[in-house]
Length: 161
Image 1: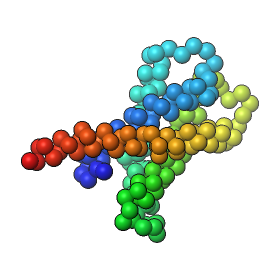
Image 2: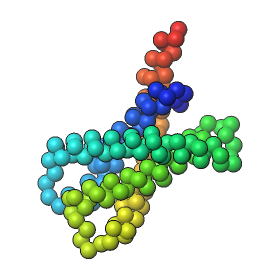
Image 3: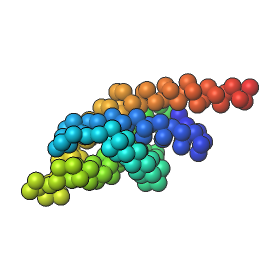
Image 4: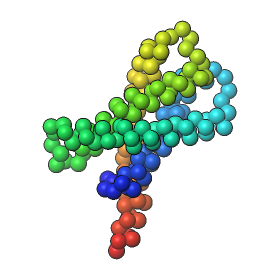
């Protein structure tokens, strides 16, 4: 787990990159594009999504989730409890904010089709949460922690020694 600001930024970038890639393609598949999608368009959506997600994670969701998790009454001596609580808080927060981005992208591609913004938002929120929570707990969280430990923390221990 990250222990410095730099490590926290690196960890956040790795996590955001993985989640944004998977969730962007998930949303494209779930919501359809209403026509052909070009690689430039996907690359632009990935880049914009990554930047927005990273800013939201660093400025809003990350600090709030950390504060919330460490004020909740549960056994913090077990690392797995902290990981699950932090992942849950992060996913709820990130899905809350990124669903607005997803709604904007869906509107850009397909329009509203008679739906209200509120019903469209909640539909996107539920779909995104159903995908993002297991993705975070089962795949992306363990993968990023492994890669972070292997490449970032290993490099740190080599430089110190």
